[in-house]
Length: 195
Image 1 (spheres, rainbow, N blue to C red):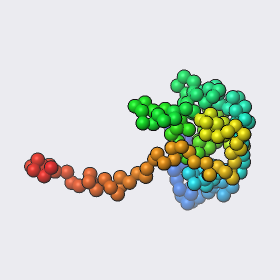
Image 2: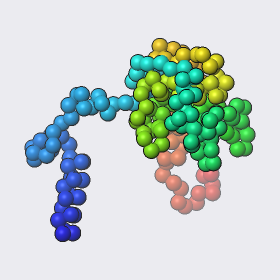
Image 3: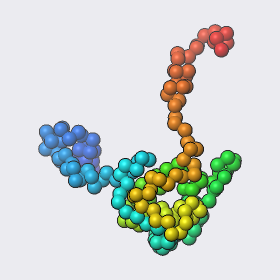
Image 4: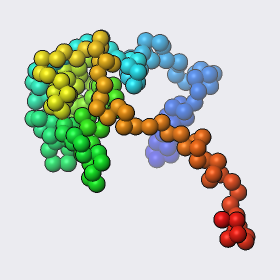
């Protein structure tokens, strides 16, 4: 029986990593249809590509947040126990122990939308509609004093909203500026004179 299970596991792993041409040649599976790929292609990048049609405001978002998010994140997005705080932390990034929240740290609002859409609520990820996610994001912005409660966040105005820490990140240019310094052959003899 164990030998049989091992062969099934091997076949499954083999099928999972085999490219589509090999899978077709061996009669294993088929290439995904464009509609199937589109159903799983849910990512939203910092430029807003992939952002779905929809809208929501903080008042509706507060109700949804209370029902689906507050058990972990608190009624006011303040976090409960070790669950993340989503609000607060203004002017703490230069402290020894900064409070990194959506309002104080995250550079792109699209990151919040994408993460909530795919990963929340805990235990039922991916169950929120696009409008519910817009409303929850609006409530989180409201909890961080970044919008008024009647502000309607939508796909039309989403990219116009600039997060407070948008300029707090820099491009990682170590490949151009530092890697050459550290990639030379290390000195192994009489190195003191060359340092």
